[in-house]
Length: 142
Image 1 (tube, rainbow, N blue to C red):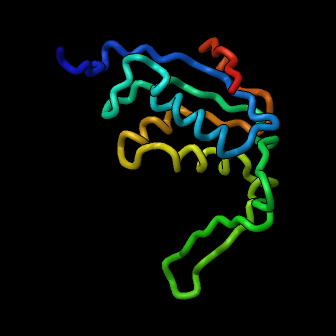
Image 2: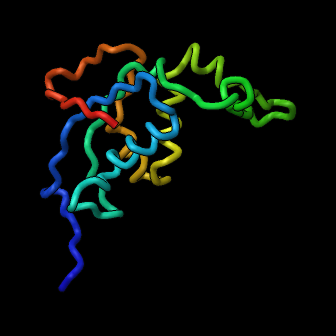
């Protein structure tokens, strides 16, 4: 018996809405990454993007456990000496919570062109409203 490999013409993508209210950031990100990769489908193929479109709403209400709001930092560097910037996650969650959720999901996807195409199917919104009602997304509880 030959190993099955999904073709691009066989992939059917669905739209899902995930409410991030009171969800733990890492657990939410791992479930969303699994859906974006398509690992929940029987036609999953590692080298092909078989995943679905995911809309995350209320990402400002996501929870970080422990003392991560004060002790965890996001680092970036300008490339110049002394150019290291550190931002606590408490500040990021207050100002750019959609960025925090997107980066958590991005870290759990494959690196390279395949992961970037999977991340393109993710939409993250701070509030409960989104602009994808025409796609008739189904609510998904994680």
